[in-house]
Image (tube, rainbow, N blue to C red):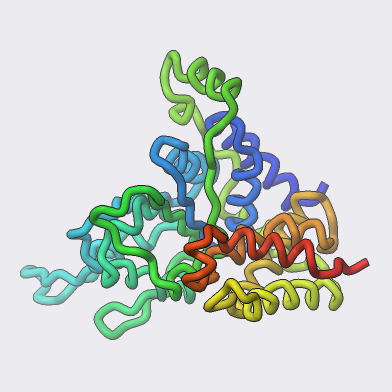
Length: 311
């Protein structure tokens, strides 16, 4: 068994002790985690978004930071601030929570666009600009942002540029009645997240990422990805299609899924598994399609059914 596959199985099993009935969501989250992307979880309150992020952070012996986004949150509350010290007569920089390994940006759409923009450079380039200086973030840097899709009072919609920074957007959804009964039974004596212990280190995750980059992806599969993303730009329902950043995200996510499946190469199955979650949130639908009830996810699914699959 490959190192990356073993590490994936250990983390997934650890998270599954807390998050019941969400194997698909765990797989998608870890695909982004291994590939170096970031995740936007959009779902109703109480479906386990924050718990999923915490379970991942506890499973990895890494520095975890949680930022609760509110309307009065300032960019300096995220990246840090320089404070003048009387004893030394110098300014000393105090790092903000963005300098952690795994960052939970809870209810990200409740903060102002100015504050949200503090994440853009960090998520895209792994660095932040403070007081005219560039400060590098940790090599392992992973953002899990959450937002509530039904409560719009006091929220600020994420701009397209920021949505494009997330490798994946998906929802957990409600579990089956049987799984919900299991959740109740598991919490009779306390929340199971209190017993979660780290099972891998930061070095293990970085080793898995290095292994993932060696996964082969043929020219035909690369063209398949480009054709899927390119089709969103000419779809009549779409006002703004996906950028080349979407193609890169699909490729890297598919490489991670190949590692999870114990393969040394990417297949069309991995592309199709991740395409909707990696592309749909980047699309801007035209008003007519939006009013008719057509969703971006349905557009991507239609493209997947239409395009020929490489043999």
